[in-house]
Amino acid sequence: MAILSSLPSPTATVSSSNKAPLLLVALLLLVGVVAFFVLGNEAAPGDGEGGLGPAVVEVAAAPKLSMGTDSVSLPSAREGVEAMGPSTVLWPLEIELRLIEPGDVPKPDEGPVLGAGANAILKGRIGDRKDRGAQATITFVEGANSGRVLTTDAEGHFGATDLYPGLSIVEVAGHGLVGARREVRLRQRRETLLNLGFGLLGTVQGQVLDETGAPVVGATAIIDGHRDQTDDNGFFYLPSLASGLSFLELEKPGYASHRENVAITANSVTPPDRLKYVLKQGSTLLLSVSGNVGGPGPVEVWLSPGNSKQARTFPFYKLNPIELQPGESREIPDLPKELVQLRAFRSGASVYPPTRNANLRASKHLPVQFELRDTPRIFGRVYADKLPVAQARVVLEAPDQVQAALRHYRQPATYLESSILPMPPGARQEVRTNGLGEFTLSSWDDNSAARYLWAESFDGQQFGIRLIEADDLEVSLDLEPRAKGTGKLTLDVGERYQGLPVRWSMNGEPGTPFDLAPGEPLTFEGLREGRWSVEVRWYATELLGESSVEVDAAGAELGLSLPEGALNGQSRDAWERAGRDWPLDSF
Image (cartoon, rainbow, N blue to C red; front, side, top):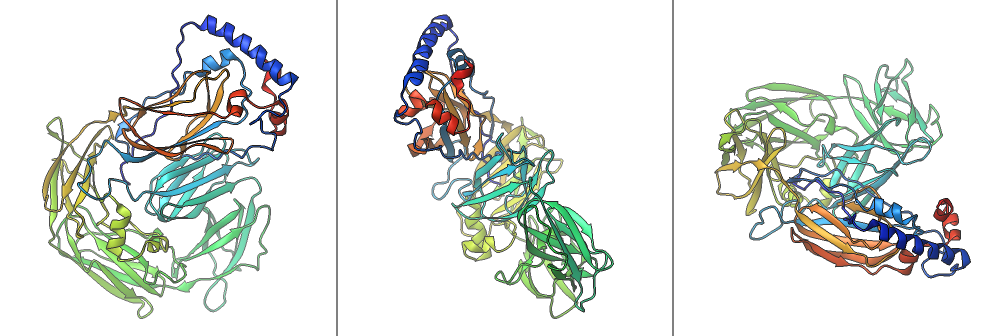
């Protein structure tokens, strides 16, 4: 993962002085508002008479590795809004903030800055048994974003705008949900949708046969993490599954595992004889490693289909990475009888050959040997307060991991979508320091000018980062306490006499909705310094379209001209047609 900061909540600052005069003015204004809406204004511009407003889509993304911490609270304006009485503004101001380029990391003389390749977008909604927004986590368990966790907001929406493209598997879990595992195909600078509902569940059943047509007894069938064993006739039964496109995995020792996409229909049961699957006898790889260069740590071997265009019927991701110690030999059984590709890596060593193909169709027991050789290494130490830091996490990564990976694979961008692939060592390496704070990494093997080297303490409280060049073979990093974000951005929405509902997201992660008090600007504090993109809409009207702004401790300000409907609010009829209670009835 590239280093991106934790994301803060916005703060709308409101003075608490002179509340009594403000209350008196507020009450007088409120009387005017009530009279205004009761006596007429049914055709006022912006009151939504043309129909219901569009559904607000909010997304959420768990922040990547933080370079700073945030201590920003939710708006203090809420108390002021309640004092002014209810707002008749039906639709919220929608704000999207996205960090384009962090200002708190060193920049190379030329080329991209850290995290440039993380530009794929994932959005969606998770619904509970009654189709209400579900409180859930969406965890990347396989693929380039492995370990990243997204969370839903109160309405079940989630998302992220800074993901690495490629094929991934996510796990959806939450209180009261049966759970799901789904595959997502993320593309560069494009949006992928994942919507799941746990209301009307489906059931999948089928039969597993061997190559002779005989039933396979005791095979494990898995969908969405739900498991069943095949009976004496080879049948399995998996109920209570979220509808949509999922995938089935079949396993039994002695056979090559089988993976296949399966459509789950809501409130439906597939006929038992409709889905039939064949398990085939597998082949075995005999892996061995000679030499003892590099490390510490094992040699990692990654398997993938030898032909990226063939159908993916084997779950290689469940094996990867295969770890071997120098001098060790290991059998990998139950592999598919097809052409497979093997890649091997050990930090601080050159593995020969680094990539090779193995035709498992030709042999049931195929030996493959890798040799560890010397290679240029980066040796370093991690310190904090001039003392060595043991078990620090040390990462060497390309500014644009995606382009570095494609150079390593020598493939076009679509190759990352063909299979669940690791980030190769030319794009990213990670190790832990020993008891003396020492680490060893392999120097990169392409023509890129620089790499980012960063480290964090075991508890994550201290951090350090620097740029290094290809000829930097001995380096050190000094860790310091994580700095808090100091950037401030203010959106001046002008003079208003009633509260304004606000919904906002940052890098795709939604913040808690709130009401902005009359006359107050909206201020986001504790931001990372750097260049930000700001988009603002109200009732499908674009007020600010991807404006780029430099944010620093001195603060940046953007002015907005609100439509009349965002100032005067909407009529009782508009609220009722939206299925909402008229707010002035309870005041």
